[in-house]
Length: 541
Image (tube, rainbow, N blue to C red; front, top):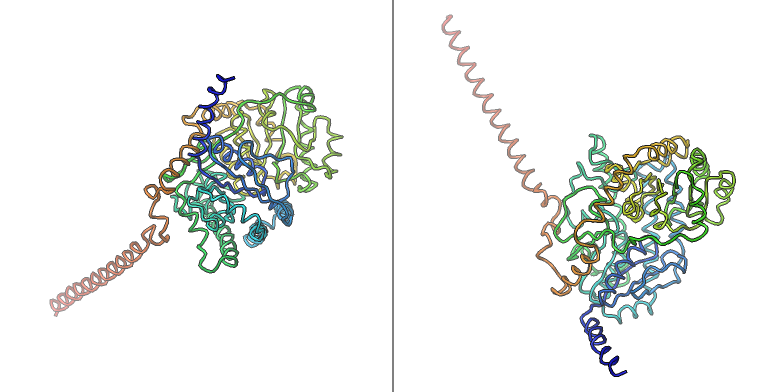
């Protein structure tokens, strides 16, 4: 007994030392998207495992299933009592993606701006919860982590007087982030985040559209930032700083995508990639009914899921019918159709008449993708799904809806392990999906490239967890700031950044000089001409 006590003392001492050296960290993760909650939870867990006191703050901006556990080691502070408006906005947004008229600039603007408006209203409801705000203040946090999609949390970090603001990019670097931080972004070959992203080998017109899409995306997020500014100035005074300025001063930016699952691009020295963080590398044994469903496959499995944001009952009826028609053309493959809602009578009835399709509300995606029988994954192209697919070397067919999804589909297509399919064409005819499935199931090049991508992602040096923890501790140990890595260009206007204030006046001066030289040359030539003509006349006289 005495020996045990002696043995326990150094362990307890080390534990206390770890806690005393740890930092108090707030990870802001509103419940807008389950995949984003999981991603933020992985960040919180890795920091908690490193000995830091981490609070994963999850205000329920959108109602989520109580069974969703986004963190195992961090302390989860989930707060309810919010108006459930975001879910309805997502439903309307999904439906609009199938309407041809939604492609007009005005309709796109009217559709997309409703989402940040709804989120900003939830942000105000959060600020009015005095008990929650007091609880957050009581922690005296050292470090804040928050995503780029909405800056409500970044403004909150200023209210809570958190010294160090670390910005998370939940997908490849978005256009408004590049704009705020002045990250070099040549739009001649870097696709913007758009409904129909270009490749990195664009035509002339695609480059023109890409410039517009980048501007449009940046403008929409600036509109969201302005609403956040107005909200916080309403509650905390007119001198509250611009939220873009708050995030601009972030000493580090953590990008949760993988370098091999993005287009090659210039970055800044304070941008750290942490793609693959917390993703389970090993599959768990399948439980029923999935174990039995896999055994029914003769040639393999096709897995279908549009993630947690695009529910099956959000989709147009004809689109769903065409999906089942396409699946019926591959009777030797077992199709597992995930995320079916209980009130989706159409999909449930179609499954009864399509014997090779199994529909389910939920499926163990990572475990299914790990199966050797898995031949193709039909996905919306969300980044978490793309990453899990790459880690398991499964060829993909992507049908994008919004955000980074179209761009992600381009990445898989560019690197040879995916096919992009236009969902609006599937709504018109199943033939486009049938052709894509025939190609991906019968052409071995897709699997070969998927295996290469898997190897690159899995064997690259330096793990995501080490990067996250060590860089976080590094910046905290250095007064919570790293001005040595932050470019001065982030404070410049585009006129100064690209030297337009020098180039334009210089061009004007050059044009004036050229004009004067031309005029001088013209006068000289005219004078010479008159001299010659005059000399000839005198000679003739």
